[in-house]
Length: 191
Image 1 (cartoon, one colour):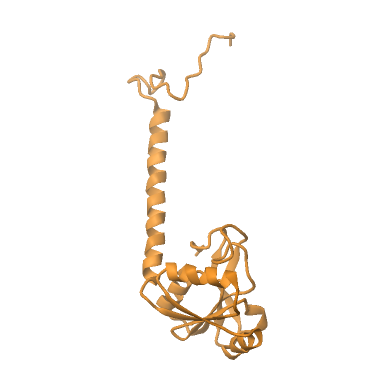
Image 2 (cartoon, one colour; image 1 turned 90 degrees about the vertical axis):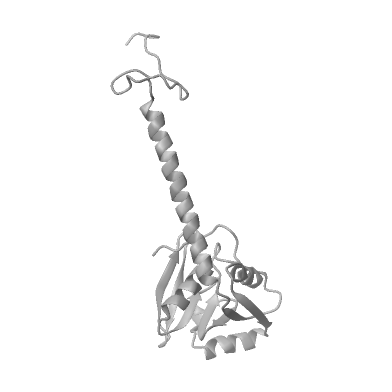
């Protein structure tokens, strides 16, 4: 190839010539346009699913939350639940009383977090996303409830980005299985 004899078209050049380009169209740009359109459609569908998830949980179920006073991440989780349509009340307890309530509900120590909620007979322990609570209320498994042990960064009330975490389904015998996994987003579980 001689230097200067070939010309590389710029991204804005729409008059390429060659096989399949006799009409002056740029198949690369057409493909890019179709991909952009597909991406927009995919993004719209994802947003719709998120909205449906919120609508599914926005039926006004009441969640009674117990926490210690001054817990900022508990307040963040409560706001997340209210934003999804749940009606939330919060009672502040001394740490010993809160722990006793968790144990009485059937949780094991390694399943606990900083706050405990109750909705329609289920225990919601820790920073469980509203989408998982909505799924629980829809499926109604024979279980104690859901738990996100500890305080994973990125879970509702614990900041925007963080680490992957699991939501556990706590069985009536106290054992737990993974119910939902949240790899990067607190709102969209991997099923």
